[in-house]
Image 1 (tube, rainbow, N blue to C red):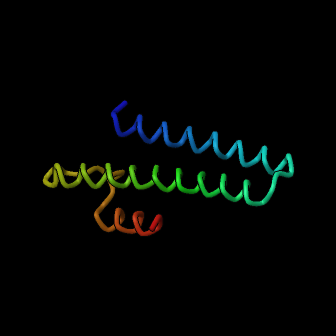
Image 2 (tube, helix red, strand yellow):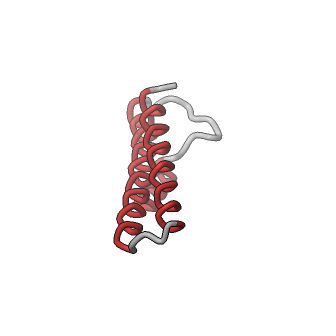
Length: 87
């Protein structure tokens, strides 16, 4: 597993933990402020993970622009669309 994959996996695990906390807060009928604050943290963690995924793919394209890409590889247009989905 690459360093980028470890970073992404860690961010997603952290987001999962935060989401579990949001669910527990809703179940416990905690104040709206607390629930929304935790929900915002989940959203931010997911966005950061998404940006790391896209950033890694972009770096690979830039680092090796002449390498022939397989069918599963992203085009620059697809990377741009994915980036804009998170922006």
